[in-house]
Length: 281
Image 1 (cartoon, one colour):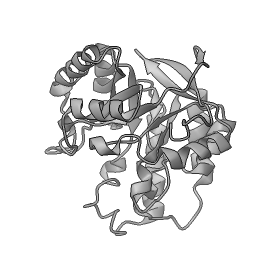
Image 2: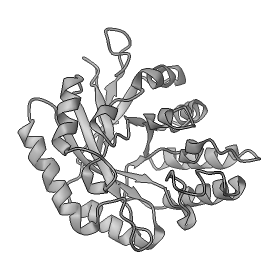
Image 3: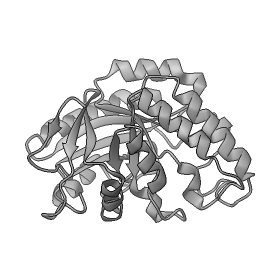
């Protein structure tokens, strides 16, 4: 951490999408206006950059990154003094495109880069239309390949945040054996690389009915010295800050007193204040 702001708690949401990902709703300005109306002081657009099979349309293309980045900069200045707006990317890990991810992350003055994994081994584990969502995949195999891919992802350094760490539980599928050792290795490696883990509150709207990651993983992250961010994964303005009231007590119970925010890839800390109306961030 570079510094800790101790005078108040900043209401933040570090995972907001835009219509450029082709599966979110409303304009970027609609998200900003909603955040302002809710008393948020800082938000970060963290839209998808996913490169998988040909024809995939659930993401902006690399050619659209300049448009996206410049749109955020325009809004940042338009709302200067009203709300802090940060520009980020949620890059879906694909080992075949790492050089391109590195180039993009270094070519623009993004505030933060998040890394996620939605297609381990080319298998869709995120879509409601996937076989995984319907329980048609072998859970042990999927968990194994997912965690193996996460471990490989952590060999690279183009990102700052690890997004929705235990995403696989989204649809309620559970493996027949424990993968605790594998998760422990990933947490340890994340801490060693001084990356942050996102507390993603969207899990409450799915069968998982809890944040990504789970409370047990949040506790292990704290013990391993891993810093955290928080985001709603909003794909519509009404979802900004969703279920923050449920996750804040867990964060505090795990031992965290501050969360991370970013400016031009530099991390700083904001103190979590209990009481005084801050319970829901």
